[in-house]
Length: 88
Image 1 (cartoon, rainbow, N blue to C red):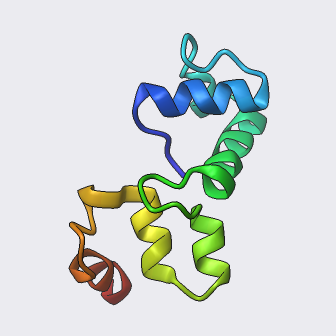
Image 2 (cartoon, rainbow, N blue to C red; image 1 turned 135 degrees about the vertical axis):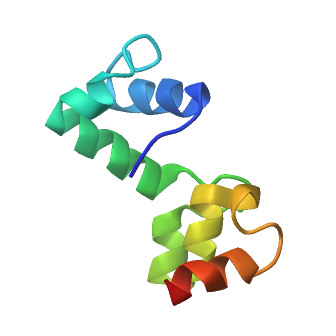
Protein backbone atom coordinates (compact mmCIF):
# COMPACT_ATOMS: atom_id res chain seq x y z
CA UNK A 1 0.00 0.00 0.00
CA UNK A 2 1.48 3.29 -1.01
CA UNK A 3 1.77 6.34 1.17
CA UNK A 4 0.99 9.67 -0.38
CA UNK A 5 1.24 13.22 0.91
CA UNK A 6 3.86 14.37 3.35
CA UNK A 7 1.46 14.35 6.32
CA UNK A 8 1.07 10.57 5.92
CA UNK A 9 4.83 10.07 5.86
CA UNK A 10 5.13 12.25 8.95
CA UNK A 11 2.37 10.51 10.91
CA UNK A 12 3.48 7.04 9.85
CA UNK A 13 7.08 7.78 10.71
CA UNK A 14 6.12 9.03 14.15
CA UNK A 15 3.98 5.93 14.75
CA UNK A 16 6.72 3.47 13.75
CA UNK A 17 9.65 5.48 15.09
CA UNK A 18 11.26 6.35 11.75
CA UNK A 19 12.11 9.76 10.23
CA UNK A 20 9.94 9.21 7.14
CA UNK A 21 9.19 12.86 6.52
CA UNK A 22 12.90 13.47 5.96
CA UNK A 23 13.77 10.05 4.49
CA UNK A 24 10.68 8.93 2.60
CA UNK A 25 12.75 6.53 0.47
CA UNK A 26 12.97 4.19 3.48
CA UNK A 27 9.40 3.13 2.69
CA UNK A 28 10.52 1.75 -0.66
CA UNK A 29 14.01 0.54 0.26
CA UNK A 30 13.61 -1.12 3.67
CA UNK A 31 11.20 -4.06 3.66
CA UNK A 32 10.44 -3.91 7.37
CA UNK A 33 9.58 -0.22 7.15
CA UNK A 34 7.51 -0.87 4.02
CA UNK A 35 5.35 -3.34 5.94
CA UNK A 36 5.17 -1.19 9.07
CA UNK A 37 4.08 1.89 7.12
CA UNK A 38 1.54 -0.08 5.10
CA UNK A 39 0.04 -1.72 8.18
CA UNK A 40 -0.05 1.60 10.00
CA UNK A 41 -2.02 3.12 7.12
CA UNK A 42 -4.39 0.14 6.81
CA UNK A 43 -5.13 0.01 10.53
CA UNK A 44 -5.26 3.70 11.44
CA UNK A 45 -5.73 6.10 8.54
CA UNK A 46 -9.37 7.04 8.22
CA UNK A 47 -9.11 9.82 5.65
CA UNK A 48 -12.32 11.77 5.97
CA UNK A 49 -14.53 8.74 6.63
CA UNK A 50 -13.95 8.25 10.34
CA UNK A 51 -13.15 4.55 9.77
CA UNK A 52 -9.82 2.96 8.92
CA UNK A 53 -9.75 0.69 5.85
CA UNK A 54 -9.40 -2.35 8.13
CA UNK A 55 -12.45 -1.38 10.17
CA UNK A 56 -14.51 -0.84 7.03
CA UNK A 57 -13.59 -4.12 5.38
CA UNK A 58 -14.02 -6.34 8.46
CA UNK A 59 -17.52 -4.90 8.70
CA UNK A 60 -18.25 -5.97 5.12
CA UNK A 61 -17.85 -2.52 3.61
CA UNK A 62 -15.37 -2.86 0.73
CA UNK A 63 -16.46 0.48 -0.71
CA UNK A 64 -15.80 2.04 2.68
CA UNK A 65 -12.23 0.73 2.66
CA UNK A 66 -11.68 2.30 -0.77
CA UNK A 67 -13.15 5.56 0.46
CA UNK A 68 -10.90 5.54 3.54
CA UNK A 69 -7.84 4.99 1.34
CA UNK A 70 -8.57 7.31 -1.58
CA UNK A 71 -11.55 9.34 -0.42
CA UNK A 72 -12.73 12.04 -2.77
CA UNK A 73 -9.99 11.23 -5.27
CA UNK A 74 -11.82 8.06 -6.20
CA UNK A 75 -15.24 7.89 -4.59
CA UNK A 76 -16.45 11.45 -5.16
CA UNK A 77 -19.14 11.09 -2.51
CA UNK A 78 -20.93 8.26 -4.27
CA UNK A 79 -20.30 4.62 -5.06
CA UNK A 80 -19.31 5.08 -8.70
CA UNK A 81 -15.57 4.89 -8.04
CA UNK A 82 -15.98 1.96 -5.69
CA UNK A 83 -18.20 0.14 -8.19
CA UNK A 84 -15.54 0.60 -10.88
CA UNK A 85 -12.85 -0.77 -8.53
CA UNK A 86 -14.99 -3.77 -7.61
CA UNK A 87 -15.73 -4.48 -11.29
CA UNK A 88 -12.00 -4.50 -12.14
